[in-house]
Image 1 (cartoon, rainbow, N blue to C red):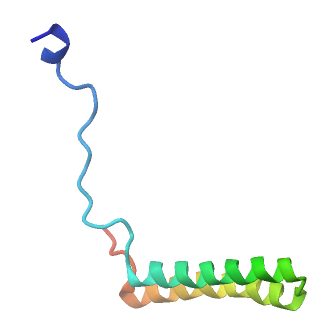
Image 2: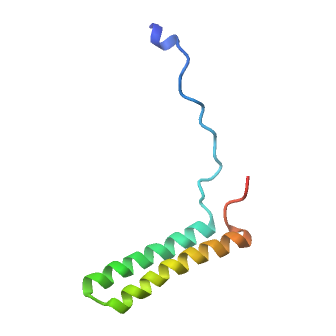
Length: 79
């Protein structure tokens, strides 16, 4: 054994997490927002500005849907 292997680790212990925010509220928001970004990208590529603005609104809908679902109890539980 070397002197280095006998020293205690300087890294703190990492706390165990049961989840990483993987909840129905979070996934719903993420899926809606991803679809919005895909539509927005396609709208810019084809030059369809009304579709672009619909996709911007869809990002807001995704954020609101995630918040509403979290308030309904489908989000991360408070510690």
